[in-house]
Image (cartoon, rainbow, N blue to C red; front, side, top):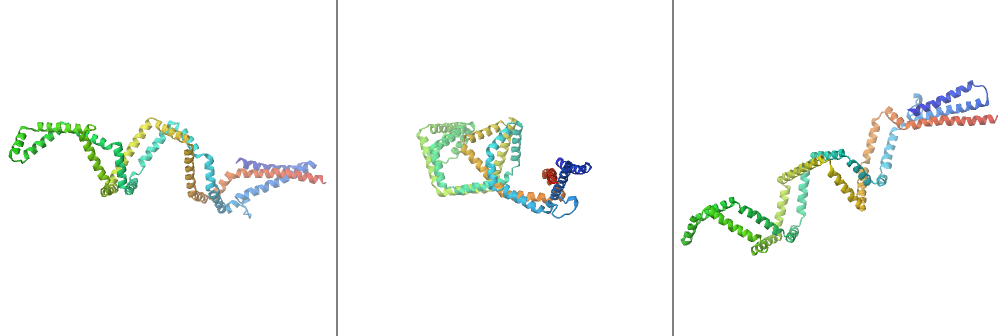
Length: 415
């Protein structure tokens, strides 16, 4: 340690100077120097003793009130921990310091700098993928099931059904659903397979029909005249014609069907018993093992999809990640109140976390101190503060020398 060498050198200089004065001729100047070096030697030794006494027994002699740090290590440790917990990490000091730092602005600037490098963006995406891959999705399923069941239990069935019905009528969902069903029906009816199936079924039923008299004769004659293709084609044309009427806006048949649909929907929306059974059915499905399996599968699919999206983003160098971050930054900058609110909440979260766990930091500090033996503790303290303390020895020698000069001068002046 350089400062320790300088301190030792100062003591050597004072001792050598004091010894050299004995070889000089008697002279007032010699007496003046002798007094200065003598006082400097005494001051240097005194400060060496004081500094050494902090860490160990001077010259290994167990002189009382020496090796102060080792004798009081428990009290010093407790004082450090108390200051650490109650002074440095108290709620007021942490809050004040965090607010001075402008946490949100610092975080935003740091993330923006990091996002400017492709390697950092790809690393962040890799981290997201790893985190997603390791998420225990199965452990989330019971909470999701419970949440769904709780939401369903808290829903007023009639109120919800009424709102849904009103919204459906306003947005004309009944007409859209009817058009969708008619389009799908027309597509199926138009297929050759549908014609053959309908013809086969109709012909078989005609042949099985038990009708007596002239009507029975007519039916049998008609069945004998027709075959599956003809009968299927005829039924297809009838159904397609009916569907065409229902597709046309304002057609009486269409309005009649829509009116009946709305009537049935209103009946369902006002049937409290039916709605309650529906709620119980939904709750049962949500809480059932089948529901758990369904949710697990959906979560796995969502995870796989998200990991694939992140992989595609990695191939592009994370450009969308940068775009998303810039959007967030612009959004926050455009609304100072939002930025202040986020900053305030972040500071509150950090402060609460520190306040709730600062005793753990104190316990960690005490544990680390307890693990150190006396030699290691003294070595650490000398390394951290010993250098500054060594300058006390230098100052003691120099100040003693100057004071010795003054006192010797006074003694000479007084004869």
